[in-house]
Image 1: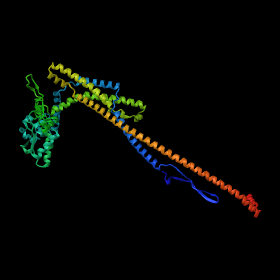
Image 2: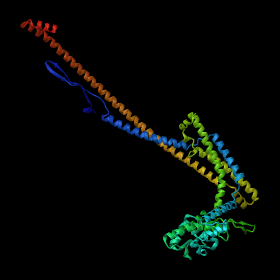
Image 3: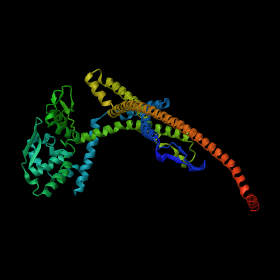
Image 4: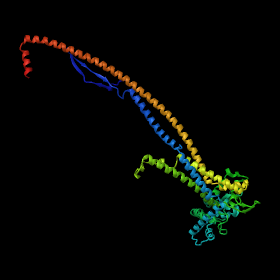
Length: 517
């Protein structure tokens, strides 16, 4: 389709033919981007290029993620991973040893006693014995202490009375007691229980007083109770730790109320754990020789023992990640030919970081697996040696030698490795889909280019035909002009005879004028 505005107009040619003035107008048609078909093709190609570019951006991103989720470990990486696992396993066997709740509780008691002494000193206590420090803090009582017998007496009320839990939930119930005048906890069956506060002297009269007694007095009272009472300093029931407090609070919920562990309900199991009968040392007749209370001091001790178990795990982590970083850094320096410090900016530091890629995850899976195998083998050997064939004793000794931190880290490594494998497969499937769409877009672009070529060919044919037509018209024009000139020359000879006959000297005079200017 040719638009009028797309015509190139040449200047008009005017000639005289057969004594008449004849005008010729020559027009040529050119193809430009405003041609309808060409415009549609260009718009189509432009849209295709836009989609192709967007898909390429997505493909580049997917390729990076697929590379990150791909394991590139080689023999050297595997060798170091195994060696690190063996080293950390030997450290666990010969230095960490077995899990000791007694040792941990002793460490926890020492830390609790130090904390109580510091709180008492802050409160103005100038002595140096724990009993005096506890007595100094006991003046900051709690309203629910007047309900001791309602919550199981001196042995259990710290566990059953929620306001005696050193947790955010305990603080919440302490404030609730200030505003309601009631104590909240559980009975001997683990059912939620609410009782009226017997002694309301420690209930604030104003809102500021309620917050002061419910927060500050509660905190100091918790400090005095965590190390026992002034009559049994460093011993006594103490306070339940955060884990046992949470378990007790959850056990009061309907969803956990009927839960049983072995032949005991969850509530009874928690109570026996707190008062020391569950983990107590017993003689051959099954009688308790020494109770082992799982209170705040014991929970702190468990943290200490787990910290000891974490040492070889951390060493293993540092060795593997350190080797990964140093090796990749050396490879980057060689690849980028870095010889000066200022050229370090040329390095791709992302490739050297020992985090968030499957290569380091696979190395850690192997190293932690090696560590766990050595740890479990050591635990089994000690269990067999100390149990003398007694199955129950074997399980106990085996559990005491197991490094639970190492098992946890190994589980995380396996889970992370498997997750990255699934993510890699997902990204590959997504990439295949995009590549299929990209191929379709490229084929469509080829069809558009072919259509453009045919449009160009068609336009070129028309242009050539129009040029040939104009050449024919031009030839006829010049032939006509030549014939007109020839006739004019013939007419000149006729005109000369008439001039010579009527004015013989006129032509000579015109010739002289033209000759001399």
